[in-house]
Amino acid sequence: MAKPSNRQLSAKADMEIATFQGGPGSGGGYLNPMQANTFIRMLIEQPTIINQIRVVPMNAPTMEINKIGFGERILQAAPKSGTALSDRSSPSTDQVTLLTKEVIAEVHIPYDVLEDNIERGGLEDTIMTLIAERASLDLEELIILGDTGNMGDAYLALMDGLLVQAADDGHTAEWLGDDSPAITKAVFKAGMLAMPNKYMRNRAAMKFWVSPATQIEWLDSIANRETALGDNKVVTFVPTPAYGIPVEAAALMPDENYIFTYPKNVILGVQRQIMIESDRDIRARVLIVVLTMRLDMKFEEADAVVLAVGLNPRGITTTTGGT
Image 1: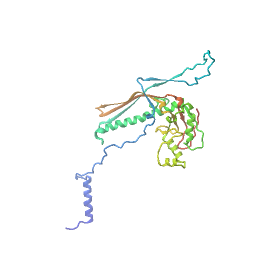
Image 2: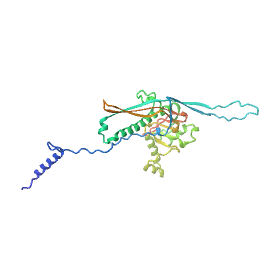
Image 3: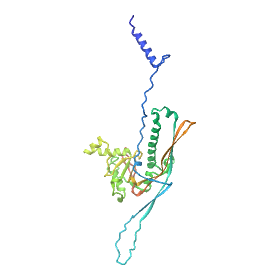
Image 4: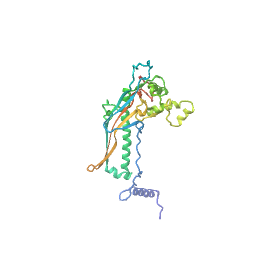
């Protein structure tokens, strides 16, 4: 039998490959793409502030939190015996009023997504977890960026958030170094000097909430030092305090701002915890998930808040303002 030529061998190989790929009448075909057992979850920013503030349960849409204290000196020089004190002291009282607003989300999940998914029966739990994670971040967005004057976003217009309330009732940090690097110790020193002295007794309980870019520039300013601490900041990521006060990144904080206060000075009033309910629309063949919540946010003591404005961690800082 004659030895097959190179051309015949090549034609035979082409035929067998075509059969494997599913050529006409071959009954063959490509194997189905291999699927992983679980979805790769998309990363989102993680909330920072909402995990640290003071949460107050509410049984009604409106709640008043009473405050009492002595804002001025009560001790005086004693008068002569038998003479009544002419200047008497009384405590100052005030109230923080919370008025909840309702937020809602509605998610539709088609039946075929649940039936054909690669996680089998676990996809519904996965989606519920993702909804809760995303809702937590959205709540922090409202807490930071809420502005009742926002005409373009009805969600953010529900309430005034940290930035607006701090601008209206708090203090403003004043930046004094026009030619200095964007974020240095002077930026945080300005915030501390803007804070009334009476609130500076417990610095360890206070926080600078900054943008991720601001935190990076602050760490970089430390890394530039020719010391062991500077070398450490290049090779490791460890949040570094400024004058003993933690500097923490909040994903949704704008680059041009930071908030300096006690985390527990922020009150989140919750009338209704996050409620997740589900239903099925058998005609549309979808699973409906509805999430609702009622909440409001206020500073307990707006006088204990400093807002930095005009920061520019991606360039040169040119902050203006005062208390």
